[in-house]
Amino acid sequence: GNSVTQMEGPVTLSEEAFLTINCTYTATGYPSLFWYVQYPGEGLQLLLKATKADDKGSNKGFEATYRKETTSFHLEKGSVQVSDSAVYFCALSDSGGYNKLIFGAGTRLAVHP
Amino acid sequence: DVKVTQSSRYLVKRTGEKVFLECVQDMDHENMFWYRQDPGLGLRLIYFSYDVKMKEKGDIPEGYSVSREKKERFSLILESASTNQTSMYLCASSLPGQNYGYTFGSGTRLTVV
Image (cartoon, rainbow over all chains, first blue to last red; front, side):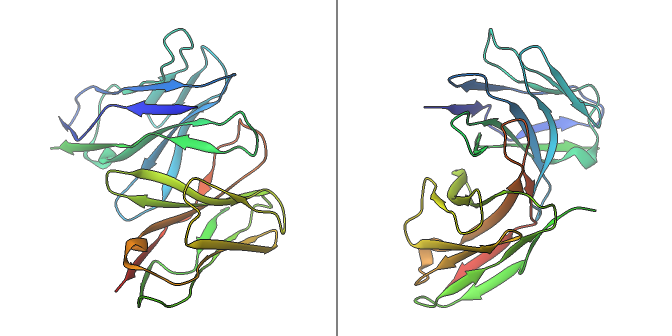
């Protein structure tokens, strides 16, 4: 079945460092791909998405490119801030209908001054 | 600002009680979802609904039921709460179609004692 695999955390970085959080997926058909962010004590917020191969989603300095050949959707940011500390979830849409999302396990990011 | 509202942020209930978790969205979305989030297990889908009075089981429906009498409201019911249902519960809604992400509520942290 469809699945999403994320790199394990926590990821600990200094402010202004470069961020990569790896995400790979297994899916039939042509799913859409998403990154969500969860700040402490909150629900998940959509960060960015890509709906077809080679699309690049971007928001708030974060980017991810839908790579069908490597079945990947890695999240990147050139210079992280302390306020980026959160848990990040990669997800894909289940093409079986009803827009069910399948989530990765989440990756915790901690950014220190 | 469009939103998904969950009725309680924190809830403490006793074992054996019947518990209602309420979720309301103001975006006229067809699809609504209930997930639970547990450390190390990520987000797991309990139930979802794609229309009024329609419901589908997710991956872990045992011990839960749902109700959707109106389009904007999706209720999760714990028929007889147990300690292993202590968790963070997240409600989400979306438009139909795989290109749409979810809008999440802020979550309800339920503790069953």
